[in-house]
Amino acid sequence: MELQRIPNGNSEKIHLENGIFDEAEQEEFLPHKPNGMKKIHFTDSEGKTSFGMSVFNLSNAIMGSGVLGLAYAMSNTGIVLFLCLLTCIAVLSSYSIHLLLTCAGVVGIRAFEQLGKRAFGKTGKVLSAATITVHNIGGMSTYLFIVKYELPLVIQAFLGQHTSSGEWYFNGNNLIIIVSICIILPLALMRHLGYLGYTSGLSLTCMVFFLISVIYKKFNIPCPLETYGNHSVNFTTEEDCQAKLFTSNQQTVYTVPILAFAFVCHPEVLPIYTELRNPTQKRMQAIANVSIFAMFTMYLLTATFGYLTFYANVEAELLHMYSKVDPLDTLILCVRLAVLMAVTLTVPVVLFPIRRALLQLLFPKKPFHWVRHTSIAVCLLFIVNLFVIFVPNIRDIFGIIGATTAPSVIFILPGLFYIRIIKDKPMTSRSKIQAACFAAFGFIFMVMSLTFIILDWVNGESRSGAFHRKAADENHRNMSLKLLFSICFNNLHAAIQNAYV
Image 1 (cartoon, one colour):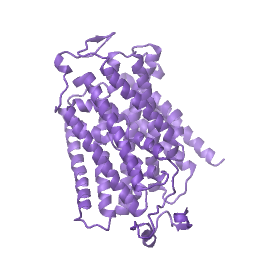
Image 2 (cartoon, rainbow, N blue to C red):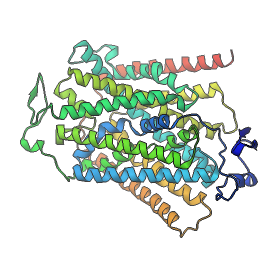
Image 3 (cartoon, rainbow, N blue to C red):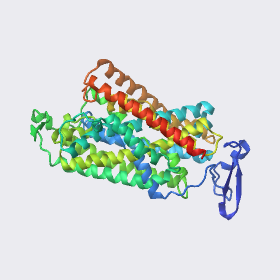
Image 4 (cartoon, rainbow, N blue to C red):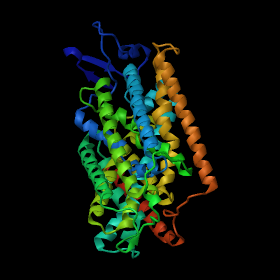
């Protein structure tokens, strides 16, 4: 293919064979000192997305379902330990983005999986694409988990019912399929990620409303609370209403994975960088720092006020606690709608890097085609819907994804990329030693988190069972699966037909 560039007013053409450049061409993309020589040129097209829209998109990629589990994380660590862990994860996440942007600037590539290929060949490309795919599928699953469990409660509240009457529109499996087809899929079919800046801004506005409501409810819900309307929450003693600065229990092992999961945005960083107007490493790092700081503030306030409302009794999904207080509360109903809108609009942003990774892996030499673009989106949503229908607990996804792909994306891969790609610095240099320690820390973090989580599963303790299915739900699941298979097949068939009309 051929890309047009106009550096310093002079027209210059860059010829690429099969989407990659040889060693001679690579020299043109290496960074040079400002002594009149050429600056870095990237092999992809220049973007048109503004700084503000890029901040919205990256903040939206960071912010997600993890925010609902942070109060639960704080209840299992205490306020001070939680603050220390949150700060460390935020700083390390920013440093990780710095490593990625540095590598991208050296080789002139702004694709995560292509950095993997440059560092470790085809194996690195496959591993990077697989990591991004698994992680973002897990992230999309947590968003749809919220839709699955919150949307039926919203419908019940609108209809003034305290319990489900068994109709199809009270079944979460049916609702996630409908939302996926009617809202998520059309947004996911957009060709460029920058177009989602407006929906990302709306999503962030919804989460700000959620934060304001959590702060308000802290001063509106008393503790200890025995009854509220016809519903009860089991605050039995005054001790249940005391905040703890430090604490440790069996559920503490889920805290760091939840925090790591809450700050992962790295698969989206390079696609957003690609579509940024006037892209420079400094400009993209500033976008990352602003986004991380904004989400750090939101996370800290949400966790603190959610924890100080329900203390040790808070659940892994914060909104469930407000349902126990009063399921028909008008403000909480509005909050639910805002959170549902926010997580629904985030799913297409998370889907873009998966599709890009799969296209790089499966069709690296093919130009853009709507059939592939559409088919991958439909298949991904199909897989995520299956995952959400069969996995019983959102906490398990937080834990497993946060303990495996999250440290891989945040710590291990960026550190290894930097070590392998940056050739002008010896291994004994400070920057490479830092990158090596960074990757080693991620590996240790992964092993320890997985070990503790598996031990928790083996012991089988503190399984609340609130998310587990009853035998009576099997018919609903089967009906939902039939609907999902039918819709998926019809959409793929229609996409293929339209492509050749």
